[in-house]
Image (spheres, rainbow, N blue to C red):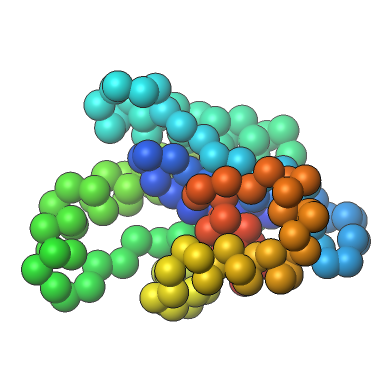
Length: 157
């Protein structure tokens, strides 16, 4: 297993989870989990830039060779069509920035749509599944919060 980072991208907070090769705990545990933020009160582009830089720093620190990142999906509804004109496009931009800043170190950058790793399940179900897979005590010790739950779920997928 290569050192792997799972990412739940978002401009309001990007969740990440990192697994290191050779760490053979049962169940396999991430070694670092967290949520990255851009500067509060800034427009979306400086936030995207700061988050991408932080991801790049973690990739270097943990010698990450594989990233599994949630890919944005748009559904054919009036609400999702409106979201595509703003939030989804900006998150796609963030994913592109992350890829661009990590591409020289990371051998594989894998995009996975939500329908593949979780379907249309709410976050509460993802949290329940992560707790079952890792154990409640491990989740407390890892201090998993907000967007990091999805990042751990993506990594366990």
